[in-house]
Amino acid sequence: MLGLAAGVPLSMALASCGSSGPGTSGADATYWFLSGPPQEGIRQGAVDRFNQANPDSKINTTTFQNDPYKTKIKTAIGAGKAPTIIWGWGGGTLRTYVKAGQVEDLTSWFDQNAKVKDKLIQTSFAPATVDGKIYAMPCETVEPIVLYYNKRVFDDVGVEPPQSWDDIMALVPKFNAKNIAPFSLAGQSRWTNMMWLEFLFDRIGGSEVFQAAFEGEKDAWSNPASITALTKVQDLVRAKGFVDGFSSITADSNADQALLYTGKAAMMLHGSWSYGIQQAQGGDFVPSDGLGYMNFPPVEGGKGDVSDAVGNPGQYLSISAKASAEQKETAKKFFTDGVLDDQEVKDWIDSGGVPILQGEQDKLKANKNADFVSFVYDIATNAKVFAQSWDQALQPTAAETLLDNIVKLFQLSISPQQFADNLNAVTSS
Image 1 (cartoon, rainbow, N blue to C red):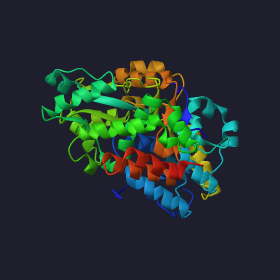
Image 2 (cartoon, rainbow, N blue to C red):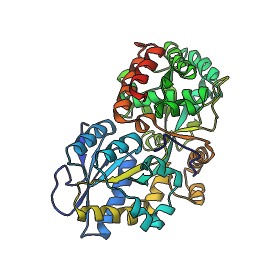
Image 3 (tube, helix red, strand yellow):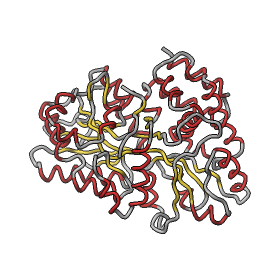
Image 4 (cartoon, rainbow, N blue to C red):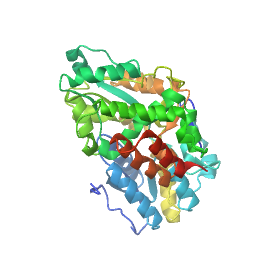
């Protein structure tokens, strides 16, 4: 399983949308996925259409917020009570499920269903593959991390979007002087902080820096480029680059998004899915062209390719090995006929998403979100390396250590070298 995919083209709150849950009996398949607009409605819509067309092989759904889901699904799988269809991000977490015999090997099924496999962007299969075998169905959208900015705020302050790391640091005091947070950040969620390191590691040292850590090379996190990246993050924190109280803001609440579209923050580093959230919740912010976006800028003297992207090459659906034969067949039928049907593709594009299907450029260009979806498509297709989010690429134990230490790094309670030492201890072979 690769940590990097080259050149990708292209509340515990529970809200039930069905009667499913651990231990549900009967022939109906079960499916858990993330809540929140606009993604939840799109996912549920695909299931509703499938159920209407297949009344004898239905799917019952249950939704969770992002962070609670990560805990709930791992607990359910470990207890042998997973839903039939397991939504996820692939990568290191999927590998642990495979090693524990908890998910179905789909390799032969894909071989027998070439029409399903061939319509998908082929590099999206990397996070779904473990030791040469496929254990998940790539689905939904390609999701690079994007640097967003509020055009209105920039115009009011009289500054231009940053073209380099030095520009970012120079903008910080200008926004602070106007009582505007330079960057919104939902630091309590941890993975949001991680996006900063992902880009800085890449832009300073190139994609090989994290790849070495992913592959377990000894002392990989102590690479001089890594230490420089960790230091720059703390420089930004000390300069008050992030909104006051960022460590108490959660991504699940979308409070970080609101800070940007209400003009209380000038910029935000977040996934491409953020566009749909701001469009749904930000009033006229997106329709009136208030939102700007760009790929992360270069760092002076850095070795990384400025086309490189980080984020999610796709989302992934696995089938529980504990499901009944009938439930498994329902899941596979859903993979064939329900996932990424014409209406779902339209819905993703309408929300600002780029489906992981080949040959969708005309649909992207014809959509109301043409500028943004074409921008995302260009990032994905032009990236020499599209790195999977670190907390998904790494094994869960190492990922948890990573996230905990990222919090400490942003709180300035550990040094860059201490961060490196702590990560070396859990990733070095």
